[in-house]
Image (cartoon, rainbow, N blue to C red; front, side):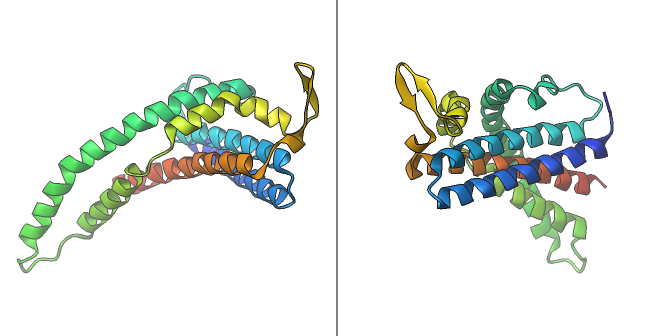
Length: 213
């Protein structure tokens, strides 16, 4: 297995770019009232964003084995099952981040208030840390609709296939034309949420890395 951060970083950039492209084409399909295809493309976009999440982790910990890393490129079901665990973990991560912020921020503010009246310049590093804490706090307060995403994922792979193909289910015809704008709007919101989360996760690692330099 390759153990090179830049290799996986390139993979992240390719995956997130493709996720955005698929979501863009989905929007174009919806504007032409092709809602079945638009929904399917959104789900494919979300799957690419899931790859991007894996690749962010792998690029920052290239020497570590990430369970299911190979499957993320091969199994649609694995991607859908994995994000369930990931989103549940995300709520825990947010709680930990906020707890850490609530501990460190008051101490930093007190120190900066203490020295501001003295004829010394507050180090740029302290301003940088304060700015990063504020950014992380804002991101930690952003909520993913966990219940909605989990409900969506139960039918996402089936919806993806239905959006592309005519089929028969229980002696009834299934068609991409059965999808409507309301269904598309739901798929779009969840997809954008996963894409944004992948980007935010990457930015968190980049900002923490810059602080450690």
